[in-house]
Length: 87
Image (cartoon, rainbow, N blue to C red; front, side, top):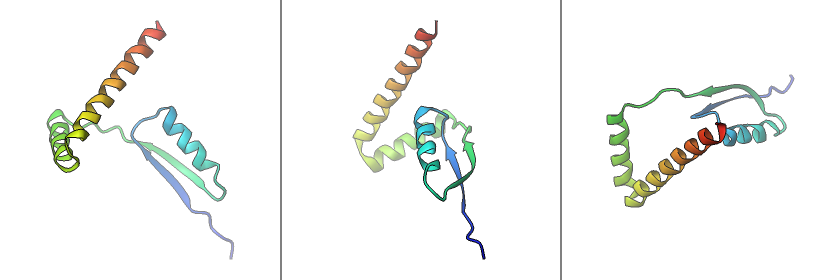
């Protein structure tokens, strides 16, 4: 009986360079058959995002909130710089 190769699907949050790099590395592994890349496009409402931030802050500690704020600032600055360079 021939050996079947399992199929792999990716569920990603965004389509960016880092995600593509990881998927590319996984595809190089022998015996991996990628069948789909699914992008999660659902967006949470502000109330749900705030509730999740509070819950994670209580579970992970106050540094979690600080790291999330810094990550959000870095992402916003990156978007602004990309827009500026595109002009």
